[in-house]
Length: 179
Image (cartoon, rainbow, N blue to C red; front, top):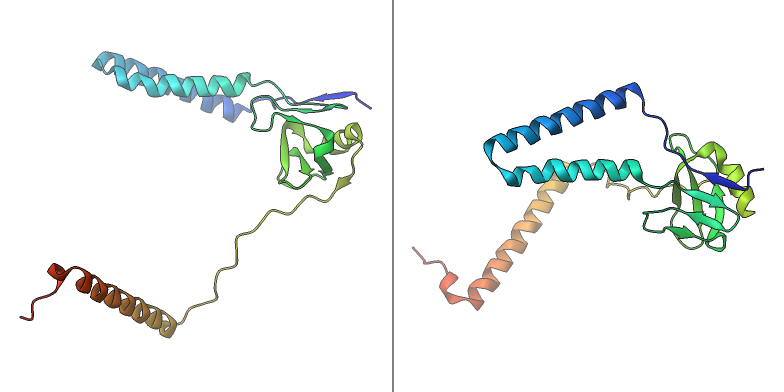
């Protein structure tokens, strides 16, 4: 059993490499065009974009050991095992390990594949349980008939007429002339 699990970034696929190279070339062309036109404000976007991409690539990995979880540059960068209720079992389509925290929403451990959920649970002496289901949006109302739509439109028209009458009473200049 490992004493520490260090997350790693998955290797880039050929498609991702092509996209990154194409994006870098586009940034260079955009940079040259902006310099040629003398638009120095246009240089801000490529510079910010480049910095964001570099920061994502240089981000330190997630580290899990017996003392807790370290997730550098995240909102919750340090999580102790006392805060963890259980470790969620792998879900189809969700690749990182997920932790169910006590009284809080689940947290993903980016860079650590879900296949290592059991090893993460063993480090923290926690159980592997079913994942907390995602919250679904509230159900939409059933099919509305034409009569329902007409009644809704009539109700809104009455509410607007009442509001207009109240405004005319409050502000006399809004009153319509009886032409």
